[in-house]
Image 1: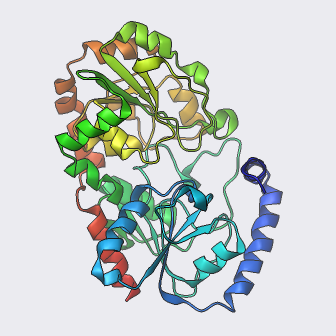
Image 2: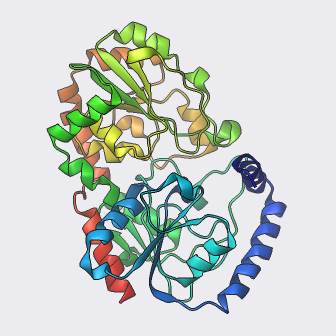
Image 3: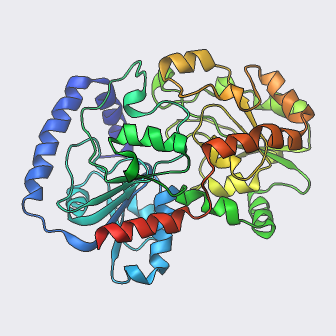
Length: 388
């Protein structure tokens, strides 16, 4: 089945409750019958990131650490991915949504994921330690908290054993969403953010050179979230006029455009001042290479604040987004925000970036991402403790 057909089926299941119920009940029964004949492999760990679309984020940081950790010598570390051929650097892979994938998940002693492993089904391994790392701190409402205008709440409930957080704010939300007591939501920091704390100037300069960011240019990372209230998983490029950005900002600025992983997009190349970075596997190098972030309600924002760089918000549809999806707090009270595209560009040019960092970004970081720098080691120690 090609990816286009699979995407259409997934969209249909998300919109039609009765089709989803049939899918969940029938396939969950099949997987749980298979489970009766599967034996746990005590040295098998399954990794899944963004539903198998990428091998990145906190699961990748944990995976890379384990490869060098002698405690995991002899372990088989397997990635569940949509397209195994896209990752020649990863030794052990299994294609998502295949019988082999479900058997592998049933055998695994541990699951490590930033989304979910079960693919909308209701099952677990016989002796699986299920670690949910999350991805980005929650700004927009997630899971059962969502207003869910236009689609329904899934009926399956994951049996997560532990989750990670980088603040007390995130900890409380993760616990409620995953049905975990607070003692099982660990204040480790996000593994994927460790590199934001350790990257040096030489590494940053190499990244900028590879991206084609010219000397003395200010790089704006524009990373909007997706808007399912319009058409689930799309981003309307009519919202942004990059030509206008260039005309107002001038030659001193370069725009790095990063569409949300779920969103469809149709960006164009505008020579040296516009770089479409949506296809880059990991976002952390883009964060390091950039000088300033422009976003809206993305969970990326607390992560970016760790670096102490300026952040501006373009919240042109705040009321509509809050009504359709829901937001945990009004982020406009914490960081410079505007609904006007022209005002956004003027703010970028005229505001004192150092003042914004000290007045807005640092206090925001202290509240929403105070724990950072050792997330990977903390997470790996937690896994090892629970699978021995």
